[in-house]
Length: 367
Image (cartoon, rainbow, N blue to C red):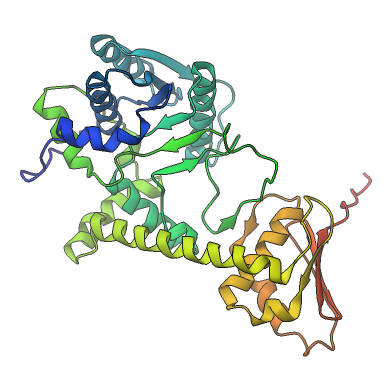
């Protein structure tokens, strides 16, 4: 299905507006632009080039197209991006996803591969920032997607304008808490930048139409096998009831603001509940009396931080953490010893002290 024509009210993004969207990136040595060839990413390439042309000094731009090799036309689309990049005088690179493709979870695997290849290109180019063309429409879909999967407040905050790109990750799954990595170097981590989160897809299409710039249409965007494609079909019905992309994006901004406040409260409470320095694998001790006195959400998250720090079985599921937390509160008024295992960590309550430590390795059964 071809991309819809923009509504009559959709206006192209002006050069002045684009300059504001990219302004905080002017001092970067290099920027990687993720350009698939679709309307959103093509607009990212065009507008970034226009912004860069206005600067005396500025970052080097590198357009990168990831060819997943999942459709017959993907190679031709990648080459079309290359031809446009040549006309815009921007270096272009095609990164191919090779190897065996999974039979299930294909979109998640493709997303992981895309970010891994973009990260590789960024490191080769000496760039720390990878720009994607996510719009307010994408933000709305993300909020609905995570709401449907029972996400917590962090998930409903949607996508941030600037966020770290964890090594080998696409970002944590909705409803999961990622492990803390205390020894990572923030100055060296790669960052995802989404300058178009406040813009609609219609405005980007209008920008391309105004200058007769061609773009591709990915049929997977309307493939009903994929959840996001089905959500796109529902969006017009929700918009008719007032729940449009702008309202969902507003919810995401408010959730992000509240999320930041709660996380700040957790950080402030931590030294009172656990005054000793946390190690990455050793035992963490929490004063359970003081933990109980905290607001429930703050206490839950503080406990989750401890489990995520010492656990060794991947991301911590929020739902499972909530079950453990409720069981802890429901114990027999301190007379009952409490011991549970979650996400590779053992949580033990005894004598008013809550110990969180790494679970012993599981014994493998002999054949």
